[in-house]
Length: 281
Image (cartoon, rainbow, N blue to C red; front, side, top):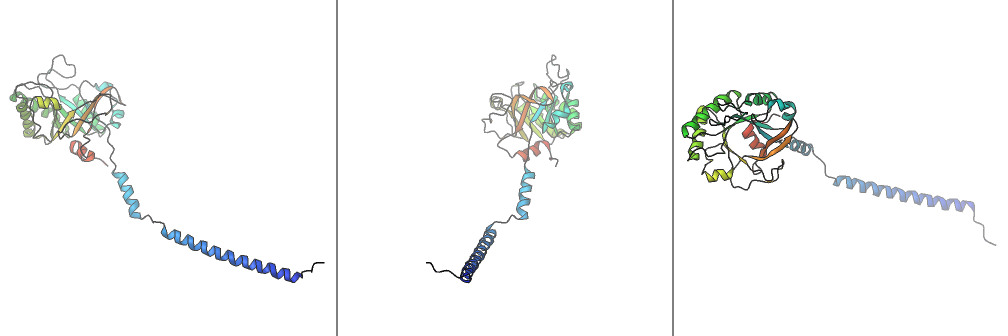
């Protein structure tokens, strides 16, 4: 027969177990609290200056849309200037097609003045699109080149363009370098502060044309001419602007456009400001 355990002993035994359990739990909670405290101290804090730097960096990110060049061949009646203006960062408008322009051209008058340049400039400027201008050089002598420069400046200057570009694509005199130099010098003499040259690198080399003295250089290289940028120019020339396709499409105009971008070798924001003026915040 087993010996009977007294109830008081059972009570004391379970009370001791309960006390030991509470002591253990309290100790465990204290250890956990200390571990959490140490973990919190090791978490790196984010200072307000770090947040400010991140925000400033985001604000400084410069987004550039294509830059277009247009002439009387892009009829104003076919352009939705409101829409097109939202999709470009600048426009270079032809003002003068040259003194020897073909009489068959329906984009310019027989005087060489572009038929649509005034409308293009006014419509873009009304929408805060910065505008530069260009003239196609066709003078057969230094005298004719200077005369073209005067006609170009006289018609363009009232609109205060950001840049004056000389488009040199055809051999019209035996020494093209002298002709181009005469055109540039006349523009400078008249008061044009920013004068650039548009020229293909092959033609430049072939005709021994120097870009020295120009404030900027703009070159055409199309790659596959797919309408998209797909190849950087293979040249050591220090250029600023790259015409990368003649088959670009943008909302606001249903026909192909010449699209341009800042040279990939240059600081995009600084070069854009050089060619088109101060960026509006």
